Amino acid sequence: MTADRVTTPFHAKSTAGDVVTGVDLAGRRAIVTGASSGIGVETARALATAGAEVTLAVRNVEAGERAADDIRASTASRLIRVAPLDLSDQRSVAAFVTAWDGPLHILVNNAGVSATPETRTREGWELQFATNHLGHFALATGLHRALAAADRARVVSLSSIAHVQAPMVFDDVNFRVRPYDRLLAYGESKTATALFAVEANRLWADDGITVNAANPGAVTTNLGRHLTEEDYAQLPAYDFKTPEQGAATSTLLAAWPQLEGVGGRYFEDCDQAVRHTPETPLQGVADHAIDPAAAARLWQVSLDLLRAPAL
Image (cartoon, rainbow, N blue to C red; front, side, top):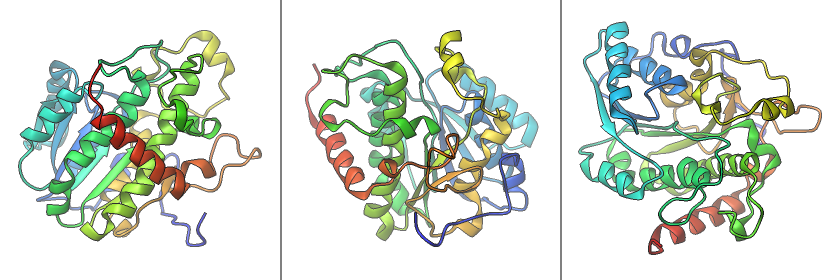
């Protein structure tokens, strides 16, 4: 970790609403993926509260419209729209990118799936890697021109403490050779989202774009719908957050003015994370998730996968 670790006045119990108190995002445009429920809708609500125009990019448009109505009612904002986006389907990602017009100031790559049974996309990609990383990778790179056209754009990539036991296995990112392990696959996908922030920030800094990774912490949402009682018995004793608290770190990275120019870092509990160690099993970032060489390699692997013809 760098010596200039970033800390803020906020903490693990802060909410997204706390973070945007006094923040003015008027005139800024934001996209939040997976914003129909959980921490996604709370991130979108906070950005709307601060005056941003927010697009809820969602797989289920009907659920997205309900979330949009709820945000409008709680914030009095009319700058809320809903757009279809299925991150596991590259055709859907391409359609979303094509439909976007004008600058983009904030992109929060929040959506995700967790611990799914072995499932493959039409390209043959493992679903969690395809959704959590490749879908967002294609979305962000596809919107790069819109981000560069904005003034001081920010991208937030959602990771998880699950990354710590799951360095990338670059020769088998889609579990073609290894026996499928759904928890390990989830962890690797979240290592990938952290590495994305490292390389995207390096490549895009000259365009005025900063990119950071956020661990929202343990939050009880429908993300855990595939977890079994046996899975939960193996998990550590997390101090679960509310969705409003879980949304605080990503909202901070998206909106807090004092983080202007800060990029390529991994945050949790509203501070830049410390290095993960066995003595701190429930916090910190593993070296393999912020390694510049691994980040550059993953970027190339991702480009190669996106360029390959579908099966």
